[in-house]
Image (cartoon, rainbow, N blue to C red; front, side, top):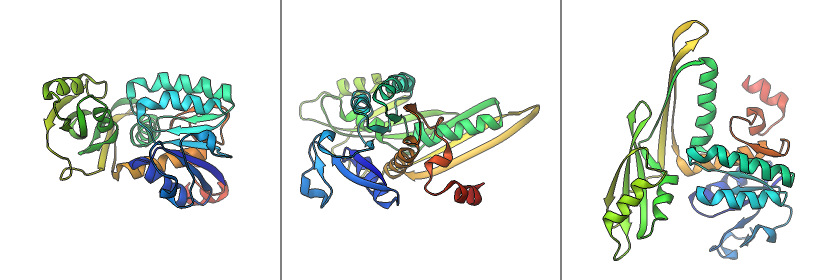
Length: 294
């Protein structure tokens, strides 16, 4: 049994607990949360620090992306493997290098930038490029709620609550519709300017809209369409399409748990979805998986 701990008890953390409990080869040894009370999860220990848990092999980091670098590094140096869903694309390479160094020093492993995108979409883009090495790939998100973007807005001073919805414009371009509930006395124009200057939004058309509450707007579903047109050898006009519609937290959490299964089988260091062998993501013997899937 793979002994796993979950850090964070938001939407992804709750979904990760469900995915671990559903997996025949995992054991949930505890949840790390700053706010959850111990009795909230019945017999599952709830602690404030991972050091309070015994025997953790892998920590599933269900925390905001901007908290991942420091927390993942600290845990890796303890000799515990980590899986995170870091989703700031412009910073993924630097994070990979940092966690690779920490994991090798701590004799542990890290699966980083795992989930929706980066994550499963990264693997799909790589496979399509392998099939048609020359050409163009467009990743079109939505319509749907982006968890990472929403969390980023909630961290802005003066924002009480927020939701960011991604609208696909085609050819990999997107519009961000950001709905904010402001704290009393907060200036909307100041908040709007900060949202648009944030790395999550700076490269996209972004509209910030003030609302009084989000109850009637919340929908955690998301979707993606990946399209590639390219060349295989000398054959032109090779066309590929991949689509999925998902519950975002559930899919992200499931991929993290599957990546946890894979990453503890690897040598010390950091790994992305491009590195992890697909067969290691799956439960079962190699013989069974080859017979069923190849």
